[in-house]
Image 1 (tube, rainbow, N blue to C red):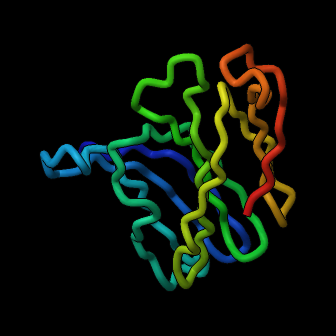
Image 2 (cartoon, one colour):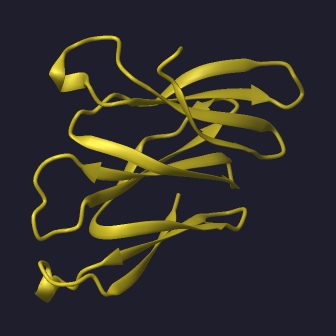
Length: 153
């Protein structure tokens, strides 16, 4: 569709994955956020399927997106940024991810944390990693100063 934006493309030995966001076709304010969908195809050329990875959610902005081959398929991950007022706190509220395989999409998972920034730290074939710049618990409204490594799935 015209409103779709490609978010990530990756593959493992069995499947290819193209993840994209889609704006809702409804004007309902509760579902105005973008949905995350993915096209998966078997590299042998036998099957191509489009699946929903995460439903639309107006309470978060999603992105950037990362991907990588892991045990069991291809992991797609993204940053969740809260759209409400976060005065004095980081705008990132979670890292969300799901693993896609030829036979479907794994459970959508969320790693909640308050962070100012997050970057991809690549995948090693078993797991993927991201690094978040977070604030210390004692100084939640202070300057972000701790790097936290997140391993997924």
